Amino acid sequence: MSSRRSRSRQSAGVSRTSDEQINDLVSKLQELLPELRRRRSDKVSAGRVLQETCNYIRNLHKEVDDLSERLSELLETTDSAQAAMIRTLLSQ
Amino acid sequence: MASSSISNPEAGPNRSRESKCKRRRRMAIENRIENVKIAKTKWNTEAEQQIYSLKLMEALRRIRRNPSSPAAEVYPAGRSAIRRTADRVLAIAARGRTRWSRSILTSRLSMKLDSNRHKKHKRLKVTGDIRSKKPVARKRLPAVQQKVRFLGRLVPGCRELSLPKLLEEATDYIAALEMQVRAMTAVAGVLNS
Image 1: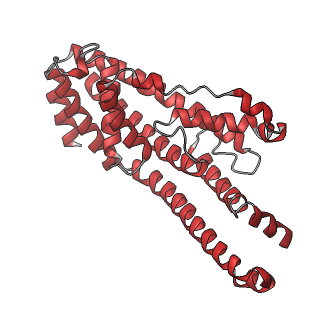
Image 2: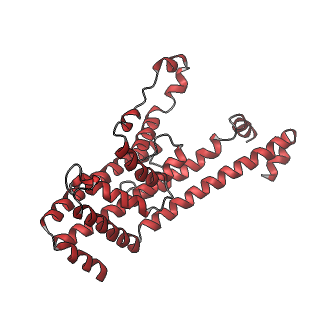
Image 3: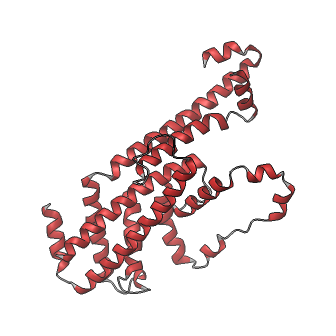
């Protein structure tokens, strides 16, 4: 125990405390990912979580792009739709 | 912490100074974890999504009504204009508390002023220095390091961020993106009917 403390003292006490807390943040991130939410055990490595995070963000970007495309088509074709959509959203 | 100072009496003053540092850092990291929890609940509320949908439509209406605006320089209300608008409204909804949202809002301005600026962001590493270092330092965790870099590039404005901050930003960004997808899907559904 004291040897670990002296090691962390040499590296200005950063690495040991941050490692545990980084693992905590990584596990919180893992809970957000739909792929890894079921396997909450330690089987999932940090590298895997990072990989899934990148993939998930890229997928979300692509979804937003597709939705933007769809919205641009819909907005061009319908004019009176704007009044209709505002009315619908306000009534919800 | 009191027990540790007793067991190591020779490093007394250093120990208390360092424990203060550690305590501050731990509090900062606990704040980060707290922010992560808040992010999940904030972006998941129905109210947040409705506000976003309304603001998005106001912004889209403004683009369409004014085809001569700079947002329409590519196409009038084309896909990229809508994407940029949706991202901008999303960044505003974050209320300036996160780095990615601030980066989205400021990058629009800088891109309008100077189109060459994003080209200057490419930085080539000089490999000569790395060769002189010990090989252990380079090979410690190359795969994980690469993924961290990649993630930093995906989240706007987080390229040179420390890992804990990057994870916090990524968590908030993912929650916000999910809300954006839900809201835009709902708007498209309403337009479709």
